Image (cartoon, one colour):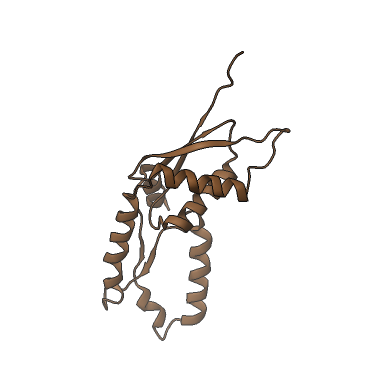
Length: 167
């Protein structure tokens, strides 16, 4: 978990490889129950990196080692991906039209426009009229992942709140 947290802090692409997966088929272990338990434990403990591809390998038998390199290549490709500003703004306007930000204190912050400021990791800047809730920013991240397939890479969303103009 500490290594995954270091990867997240540094903004790197991530592929999680689980070794010794062949041990689940050993006669001294109850394979199906153990496999189900491990799957549930992995989902719970690593829910915050559900976007990271997972490869179950066995170094001893060589099982699924051929899946590791394509997963790494995909993660690195997505880590370097750029979305044109026009496409990103079209995505944002559709998203906000379908699911506007909830009202907070009688006011609703609006997203004026956005752009991708950097890649490695993909970093987006949203120019808004007010502060966006963290839940709404996570919602935008999930939708970006669905539409543009950012598998294996963290997505950073920053905000620039427009100051009110003095009259």
